[in-house]
Picture 1 (tube, rainbow, N blue to C red):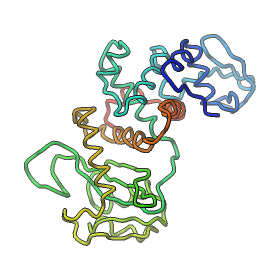
Picture 2: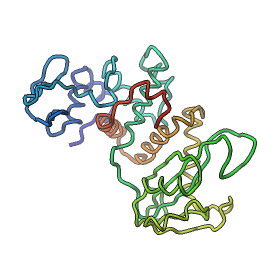
Picture 3: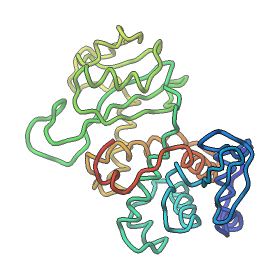
Length: 305
């Protein structure tokens, strides 16, 4: 059963203590009861400091180990407030906002927390898009002199896949930061986002020519790859919203090295845009935060996906 607070008052009442926060994470990580991460044993005893002692292998473990919260020295209640704020703001929050809101000692701490939470916004093993899907690319970056269009120098290339619903309404999306617009980059990236057998609509760019050989029903809606009549409206609309979000929430100050995780956040928000309860977004983020691997600060600043 999905249990989550619906309002700020419910949130404050439900997670008023560290123990309450820890118990909530335990229910999310082990919905059928504790399982030892080393041997899989179910018999265990709760010890001091929130640890569990496995009755089979005597291994001591914590619900925080192996999650985004691992080795955090700050209270879980602060993490929960950060997650609540991030999911309850329509356009998200910047690191400076989180630092001021929670009274964190440094901007770097707030930045690292947001980076870790963005990694939790992608559910491990998430479903790929299927049915009818539009695919196109868009360049992100400020105005720079030089070449325009595909191959634009100094800008980041983002591949967009947009699932269409009846009436050509926009459904779920997937985004990926790709190095270039070649077939060696576009086709493998789409394969991770779209189920084989789906109908994929693109323009006539040669980088998509290998889709048919990978099991996709490839449809070219415009033979010319040059900008002209808008025959991929869903992709263009999502690209426009993405650029507006990056500029409005983050003032466009997103490095290419970390762009992929900002794309994950935008995807998380966009795909849940019709959710009736913001509390459910908090629930999903907390649920996925105990499923993804920890990301130490050294790895965050190493610019490695």
